[in-house]
Length: 400
Image 1 (cartoon, helix red, strand yellow):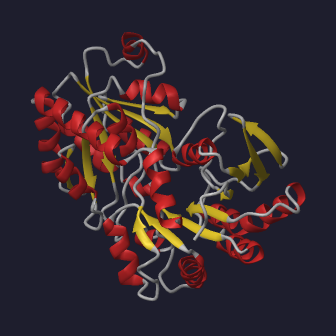
Image 2 (cartoon, one colour; image 1 turned 180 degrees about the vertical axis):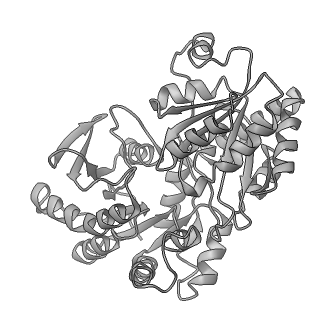
C-alpha cells in the first residue's frame, strides 16, 4: 500500500509525444498525477541527444534511442531490446540519487520490465503495469513471429516476468483480464483489474467547421473517417472493399489519416481500384485532428481477422470524445463489439463479412437520427468511463 502523501512517481514511457505539441493517453495521465500534487519523473524516447526538456511545464527526460516508429519489425525489435539499457544509463546520468515509490509503465514494450524490476527492488517501490498490448502473441497472430521459435521464447519469458513483477495490472477490458488469467494461470487475480482507455475531454480548438470541411474537401459529404496506424493489424483492405461497395453513392467519402508501414500499399491499391471516394493523408496535429473528427459522421475501426487477443482500439476514444458513432470490422477475440452493443454507440461486423460491414454503413448513412443518437451515446459513455481523472482514481483505488 502506498500512502496518500505526495508520491514520487516514475513513468517509463514508450509512445509519448512532445507535450508542448500534442497529447495522448499517457501524457494526460502524467498531467493528472502532476495536477494532484505528485512529484513526477518521465522517461521517454527522443530523437536528439539525451536530456531533460520542459514539456507543458513538466520535466521529461528524453533518451536518444534507435528509431521505433515506421521501421521494419526487426529494427523495432532491436530498439525495444536496447531500450531498458538506454533508459537506465540516462536515469543514472541525469537523476542519480533520486528515489521513487511508484513506477508506472505501459505495454508496449514488455522489455522495460528489467529496468522496472531493478528499480522496484532498489527503492522498495510498487510497479503498476498499464497492459495495452499482449505481446508476443499479437505478433504470432499476424505472422511476424514463429510460435515457440527462439525469438518467441525470449519475449515470452519477458512477458511472464512482466506479470510476475507487476504489483498491479490495469487491463483494457474484462476480455483482457480473462485472457491473461487463461493463458497465465500463475498470475494472481488480485493484481488484475479493469483500467479502460482514457483521454481528456474534447472542448474544441477553435477551428471553423466550414473551413475545415473545405480544407479536406468534405463539404456536403457523409464522411467516414479512420485515424491512426496503417499497418497489418488494421487490415485496411476490408475498408477498401467497403469503399468500393458504395462508389455509387457520390456523397459518401472515406478519409484515412495516419501513417504506418502499409500506408503506401493501401494508397496504391486504392488507385488501382480507382476508388475516387477515398482520401488518404498523413498524420495531422492532434488538435486539428479532433476538430476534423467533430465534423465527420462515422468513425472507422478495423482489426485483423487473425487476432486471438482481445484488442480494444484506442482510436475509438477520439470518436466517442467528439460524439460520432463507430463502424467496426472486428476479429472474433475482442470484446469491443460487446461494448458497442451495451452502450449503443456503434455497429460492428466480423472482419471478412463484407456484406454486413456494407449494410451497417448504409444503416448509419440512411438514418441520421440513429447516427446522431449513437454518437451521443458514445459521448455519454466517454464522460462516464473514459477520462484521465477516472483512470487516475482507478489506479489510486488499487494503490491504496
